[in-house]
Image (cartoon, rainbow, N blue to C red; front, side, top):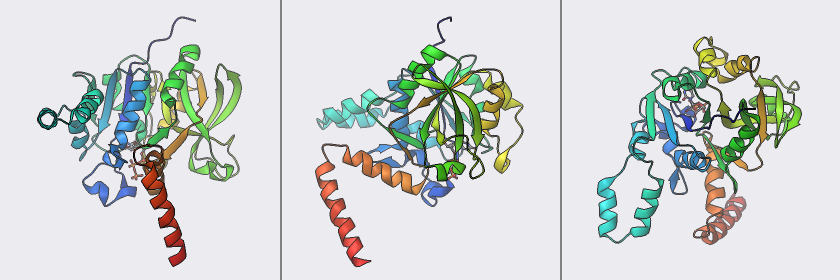
Amino acid sequence: MSSPKKIRKAVFPVAGLGTRFLPATKSVPKEMLTVVDKPVIQYVVDEAREAGIEHLIFVTGRNKAVIEDYFDAQVELYHTLEQRGKLQDLEHLQNIQPQPGTTSFTRQQEPLGLGHAVWCARELVGDEPFALLLPDMVMQSKRGCLAEMVELYEQTQNNIIAVQECHPEEAHKYGIVGRGEDVAHGFKINQMVEKPAKGTAPSNLYINGRYILQPEIFKLLQNQERGAGGEIQLTDAMLKLAELQEFYGFRYEGRTFDCGSKEGFIEANVAFALSRADIRPNIESNLNMLIKEIKLSS
Ligand code: UTP
């Protein structure tokens, strides 16, 4: 097997309307809502950089310009922090600042679905395999999900999808894969179904929002007709690609929070706060007290 092409680029589709977070998302993109003290999008970008990604491609939409501003250098702010002696804050901001020329932004002019958003990145990705990270899905583990996927990709090449176990009763809410033979620290995917009817799912392994895809997906997306909800579905194009190329599953063992939903977003805030040594003691005792008080009064 020839050595695989390095995964250098990652696509972040951030053009969704975020209707589950109205009214907040009338003016603030859901990717900019904060989990403890970082916007949701920063967690996902950190995961990509840990995996060796060199170029960040954002597919944005109307009302999302603030995401581009966030990744820009804030020279005046850096200067003020320096003058005030806040050197730790300054160093942190400079460390997370993408280098010039390593971010690209393109617009999905109409929210026609995830598949369409990915297709909008075709010129920026070009003819090479790429990572796709859904920014709603924020992950918590020692080692990033994408870093582990890249390791698997180096052994299998082709396409990789990260999956996690869900309760069998919940399988109808997700994209589900069927599990074939084990390969390296993953397995061959032998089926893919988007939101299977109750009781028909081939497994309880759901697609958790991280992918490594070959560029041939773009041609399939280009010709993809609208599917469920009148949107261009990524899963429909992946099913076609699976007729031509292998797909492997990577089973992620960490925590995933769906920050596109209110429950997931709140849970992420609690989980990340409790894993921070500087704020954990206060948060823990205050939360316990709050839960007791609310239980007593209801
Ligand atoms: P969601 O299914 O969460 O949709 O998209 P949404 O519009 O963002 O949010 P709700 O359901 O109205 O609350 C999953 C991912 O696909 C992106 C979203 O930004 C999110 O990262 N997406 C979705 C697009 O980029 N464009 C689209 O047309 C649809």
